[in-house]
Amino acid sequence: MHKSTAILILIIILMVPSTVGARSLLNVSLGFGATYSPKELDDISLGFQDPDNWMFSGELSARFAFLQGQAMVYPITCSNEEQGVLLVGMGSMSLPVLGSLLALEFGAGPSVTYMPTSSSSPRSSYYELANGVYADTEEKTFTEAMFASPVYLQIGLGSEVGPVGLRIRWLMESSSTLGSVFTSSEWWGMFAIDKASLSLALSLKMF
Image (cartoon, rainbow, N blue to C red):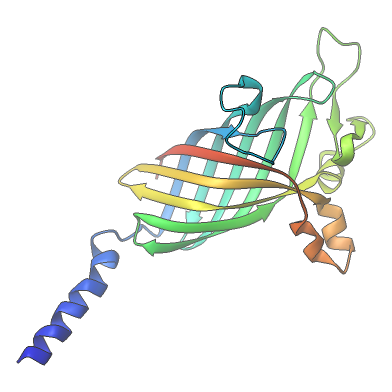
């Protein structure tokens, strides 16, 4: 009698995450976030009050089962103080740890930094590639710029409570470009990190 009761309790405990917090099979959401990106990695706790260390973003994400795709847009100031936008595409895995309440997310994807034509600058629109190299949009296509730009990696935690999603993640800029990852036999070089940021994002489920 006691043995069967113990087995029943164990079954109920194992079923709680999959019933109470079960995730939907499909989730398409729209969100926004704030990213803390300090210039120095020695002490991440320094510089929280410096507005230059913060970036705000918008993102669109779609998840089917445990496969997830994200498109993130960051308005930024380029290295030559001109205004532009950083586009990051991310393919990732979202593995549920506790139903919809907690999931482990990790992935990688390409980026493009685009600087549009500005009235304050005589220069036409251009891309900022890896290592601070500039290329006019007339010289390089969007795809060529993407292959010459840094790869981004992410690892973090996600949560879905009803239609609201919350993510906290470590977003890392690799020293490798998408082109070098595909052309080099040493693809693990993409894990050499040049810069890391702490990101928090809030999203609302669309369907």
